[in-house]
Length: 336
Image 1: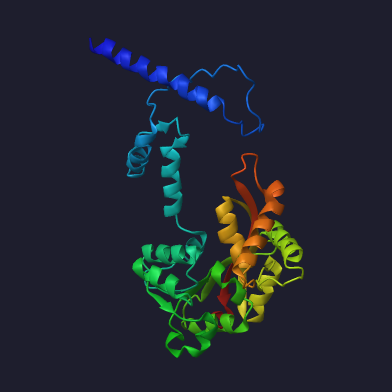
Image 2: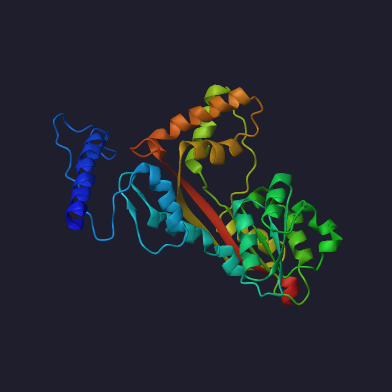
């Protein structure tokens, strides 16, 4: 009787699958962009593999949380197209050490200064703490400082351009890290001189960084310039950004007495939603437009201009070309 009951349950589950798939078959095909011809029979359900089970939407969230919590079995969530295994993989990637932390490779006795508490800066600070070293992180955004403090990071409200004037920081650190939020200021002589001033005598004096590089978000910047000229009627210069090539960054470091061990430009393509496009990319580029309504119109027009180039056939996923400059240098003064 138990076998028959199990068979009836299996038949019942499979009886529901074609109905669901029939609904799915009426949706627009994301590759061709067209609907299936009228009368097209729904696709036959794929046979379940060993260890798989069909799940319904109400238990999807609970299942993902169970998987992320450390379960070894893989559950495929077929109706939603979400894989708990993929979610687990993403969590593991988040837990991996950032490239900057690996480049620093601090010893437990090291003291590290982190300049900039954006997403990357905060992650690097956490990584360094996990590696046993001590951290002081600085930023001029009080909200970012408060958020870092809530994560157990020794964060302080300090302007990196004033490090040479902060005598209590002089000779107190073994290494320093600069991240993307520092991009506008890394061209400044005072910042690089400040990094020199905080290095401890006898330390390795290592300085690593990762910031936006030459050609970053080029398509968005071109579209935004065109949208401003079209709507505002005049050419407004966008906020200054330091977007160097590897050669530019190396020269900048050498001019301030750093020995450059590595500096390279890394191209990448970032996937984003239209919300990310507006908030993470276009909003920071339009801070010079004070009229909020006008700013909104400019951003909307820039999105429209980019749609045919950066948006995929589904109409929901955007792909933005980014470039990053990553470097590792040491203080010449401390080497000699």
